[in-house]
Image (cartoon, rainbow, N blue to C red; front, side):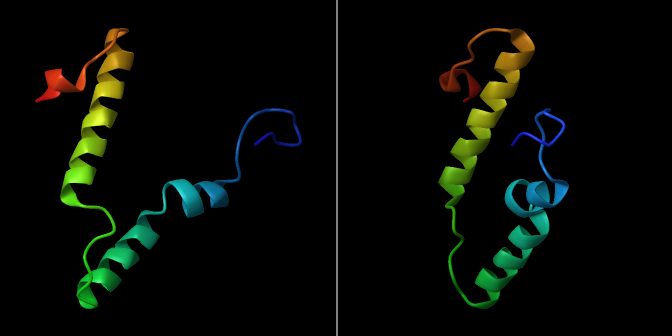
Length: 72
């Protein structure tokens, strides 16, 4: 999003609502647990997502490609 100043940025409310909505995520988890519903994301999907994030962070730190296989 480009602000009126011409600089890139975003509205902090939008950031909370769409990108870092931990409060909403926690409420969703509680609702699912109380309702006996499974989580929206499987443990395996969550694990793989964290591996990708870790590889991306290591790659940025090292300045080179980091394979997912190297994280096992």
